Image (cartoon, rainbow, N blue to C red; front, side, top):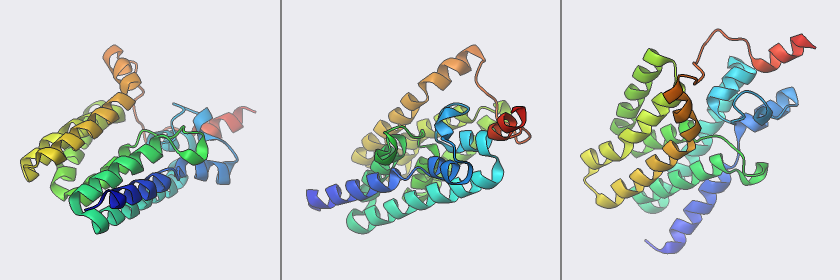
Amino acid sequence: MGVSHFCIIAAIAYLLGSLSFAIIICKLTLGKDIRTYGSGNAGLTNSYRTMGAGKTLLVLVGDIGKAAVALAVGGMLAGMMGKLVAGIFVILGHVFPVYFGFRGGKGVLVGATMLVFLDWRIFLVAFVLFVIAVGLTRWVSLGSILGAISFPITMQIFHHDVRLTVVSACMSAAVIFMHRSNIKRILTGKENRFSFHSKPQIEQDAEKK
């Protein structure tokens, strides 16, 4: 497989990843920049806290869709390694979106979609760890970190390919690095806990005016 194929995959995946649906939906429906609310992160959790369930569903569909298309293109052009390259660059686009000043989300949902396309078993392990961690602590960030840690381990267990495992480990390290501020808050017990019952922040701010 030529280098040109991987360059094409990387470019398509990055541009798709840069479509930050949290920013787009918030701007189109509320005329606000989601990055000025809550954690300042253009991701799924902050979307829910900031905009509520209905608009977050649109974000969910959009972010899953862009990752699915990127991974499908990568797999079609270069198999499993093509999917991994697409995964790397769609996450990079999501975290550093070229259309929105290189300030996006942390790539957890996009990464989870990537795992589904890579191997459902790898996704299942990460998802179970995520659910258990969030269920016990209500820290979404902790669930995301544990899921990321499991990625290179399950990749090696199920595929026995050092190249794939090394790439997976680098991606896992990047996700953990993006959560470094969350890790500090977890260690001090100050991390925000997820709740289905809280009122969207933009709605709260509107009521105060």
